[in-house]
Amino acid sequence: MASPRTSLALLGAALTALTLGALTLHVPGADTVGSPLRANLFVGVLAVSVGVYLLAVRVALRHDLPASATRLVLALAVLLRLALLLQPPFLSSDIYRYVWDGQVQAAGINPYLYVPADPALAPLRDPDVFPLINRADYARTIYPPAAQAFFAIVGRMSAGVTGMKAAMLLCEGVAVLCLLALLARAGQPRVRILIYAWNPLVLWSFALDGHVDALAVGLLALALLARARHRDGLAGAILAGAVLVKFLPVVVAPAFIRGGRLWRPALAGLTVIVALYAPYLSAGAGVLGFLPAYGAEEGFDTGQGFWLLAGLSHLVTLPAAAARIYALAVAAGFAALSLWVATRKASKDEPGEVVLCRDAGLLAALATAAANPHYAWYYAWLALPACVAPNPAVIWLSAAPVLFYVDPFNERFVWPGLVFGPALILALRALLRRRRAL
Image (cartoon, rainbow, N blue to C red; front, side, top):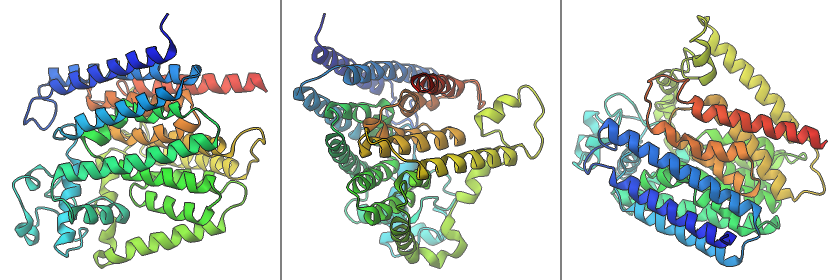
């Protein structure tokens, strides 16, 4: 029988082969994988890579591995990211908007004022970026001020997609360093960095497509480390920055104020929010960009964008208020959970870093699952807290949404059920085990 380190090396080799094999399915020049058949094969390969990844996670969690295993994990993570960095993005075109927003700001223009196709921005159009911007003729930018500041900084150093992708990978590097520090503080094996570093959805979302979620991940990791070091004000300020990259990280705030640490992180966070919004307020209400219309585009106003309601709609005719009822129920449940997380006393037998990341992972996973966006990369951030506080349901949700790169049934229940169904089973299984232990 192979040793655990050998098994990990073999699984790493398999993950590498699958990643490179998936790349060969892309038709050069195609804005997606290529034909529907190629897209289906591509997602099939990614699904197998998720299986390999989960086996690797099992090895990392169940065996005492030498320090050389951590070096292997990090080396392979870097290699895979470099391989994807050099490829053009083809699973999403969002990065072209990032580059465009950076160039708009470099020209001294508020990015929230105009849609890319507006004649006022005609002098900025170029053949490499502008033609590939999605929603160019009707949507102002949706990205919050911290993301815009990042786009502006990167845009002054590089006007290309590869430069923006490289900047996102640097943010990932910050996240990995913070995770290694958190693992060391918690007394956990550093090889568990594999949970983030080898996650296939993380790889494709950030190294290939350069999604801005990588910036949010880097900031959230910094915030977790600051909170673990009892730098509450700093943690609140950095978390606010993460929220103004992608609004979703706000859901983990209760984990940061557990134990009554409220006023300092709240004041610091509010200060950062005001400071980041201030330069863009000339757009007035337009500073929210495309966000108000995004919910309608995703079907959240009718309820069809929610997995549970989409399933119920196959059985009964939903009332017009179904989406509002669902939103209120989720909000009430999440408020109760947030209050419990913020006020409960942690066990003295558990490292504070584990408790912090477990609470953050629970809040993040439940909020993301409740919103259930159909874009795969929205789930990649869940791998971050799972490194320090491994949870089967959270790890599954952080990787399995690679399936969302295709939608064979063109509806929001059956195919997504392949992700949410197992996640629910894993969560219930963990809950039952916890009750039995009590």
